[in-house]
Length: 376
Image (cartoon, rainbow, N blue to C red; front, side):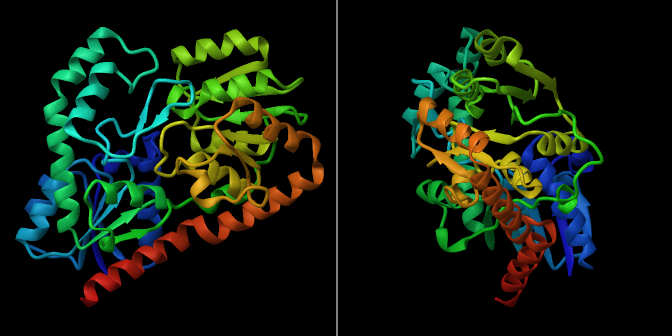
């Protein structure tokens, strides 16, 4: 099958830290390994100049940037289009939460007025400056217009692939035809199945979280660990004001390791006793928990806002908590005290991830979608 694969900065995907970028890189690799003739494009402009001379069987647009232009080009040249949505385009802040409490308040449906209020109040940021609030407020009409254009473009695509059931629900509420949507999770490289030659830490006192951002719940992870004795929290990611808060409450029990490569992430997954995924925004997917499952490291997550809770089952493949720090701490504690439960979740999560997230499995699901589109 001849596939035109388009994603902004596709030639630099290996260097991108975002989950969407890593997923695009992995999917591209495995679609090619399955024998497809895949040609990559960095922009809609590149696609436009090439598609006139040589038409593909199908165009796959990964992520959102330039998706509207890609749809128009495909429509004009009568080429089928499949779009993968890796972020919540249904919300102008991509979060679907309001920053009023430390747990965030869910917001399910965006209107222009809601968008304006969100931008004016700076809910996208843990510590919004007046400069950011003014800038985003002035840009509200542009944000909302782009949101509408993207939704219309998705309705004109032949198929829309959402990476989680929660994303399907949210973009459906925003006006995308759910009959066009297929749910396919992000691919995880089976590279994570093979343990590293050595671990970074010795002992069983390590919990790991892969971000310092407030919307990823780093502050909640730290508060939960502060309620437990003799457990250290290893935190990856860039320096943020939330990181300063973590230092205040955990002191030398907080270990900051900065931005990590794929190889380094694997070492930390295998070195940690548990991986924490306490996101408070609505997660489109969230690669950390899926990669941890592939490594057999149990995950503790919150319920009800996508991500891990869309796929994992409490006490079978993970431990899930309501949005309450005390309960979250209790779930973490169980994995440090109950070896039988720990081994059960470790084993089940690894097998579930192999079966459902392995990159070759996901690439074959994409091929099936392409075949269905071409048969119409």
